[in-house]
Image 1 (cartoon, rainbow, N blue to C red):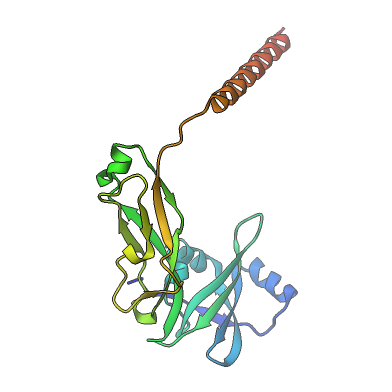
Image 2 (cartoon, helix red, strand yellow):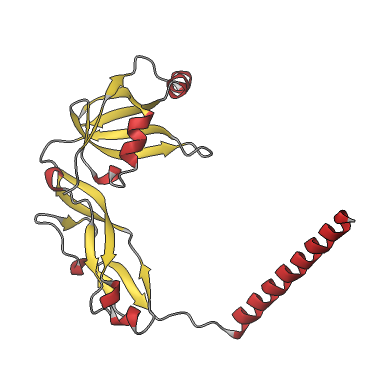
Length: 217
């Protein structure tokens, strides 16, 4: 089960772009809590604490207590240049509310997969995470998939995953999660393209070396 994250917050008295910019200059991140047929609550968080929570890798599939309110993070906006968080949307939830949430898939036991160890197969991951319908108190931090015994040509479906008790896939049908495919064999065209790139790089390096000698004179 994923750990609960706790964040302190303060209520925002003013909203709008100007107020949000002022908060960000002070190291705060604007956010909103909505859901459960209640009025949205505008808040702001300490940026350092938020970044630390984001770095856990499980921010989007953990229960987050925001000043005593049980929530899930539904969206985090980032600055396109600095990549700093600029806004967060939180959804109110009950302690045992049924929620739909994306959970990361982690693949293990590659050394025990004949298709990888002997056949040099390549794991083609179709779904890096799977959406599950689960009790909010039992959200898993990740779903582990063993590759033991997997051969080239095998496909791992969502029905092959060992899901936590009470959890079920949100998607209909037996969705493919990953496939093990044969290694790509370089063609003559690929080899020719590689040779042309190498030749061009060598010519460029020789030209730069010549310019360096000229400057030295």
